[in-house]
Length: 139
Image (cartoon, rainbow, N blue to C red):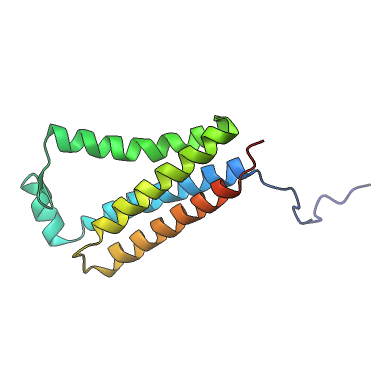
């Protein structure tokens, strides 16, 4: 008879694909919360009410490009699970490196600690994606 209250450790290996998809998911949560928390800042809120985001007008083009920017890592969750190994490796490396560059660039001139911390977490997550993708067996 089995005791259903027994807790055992889970030693099942997790696929690199699943790890990478999980990292992209985590990245998107940090993206979202850093942006949401920005609306507690008077400067960001006032700019948003005036239709501005930093130096940009929050019009059709800006909002489309912002949606595109968020759509790519959103799609990387799925693509990391289904792409062929060689394509998977390079797609994750290229996209993660490009995003790390844009995130680091968004920190230039920023003084708010929450934003810098969130950006640092995002860059670390992207670095781990690159590391896993680089180690990913493609044969």
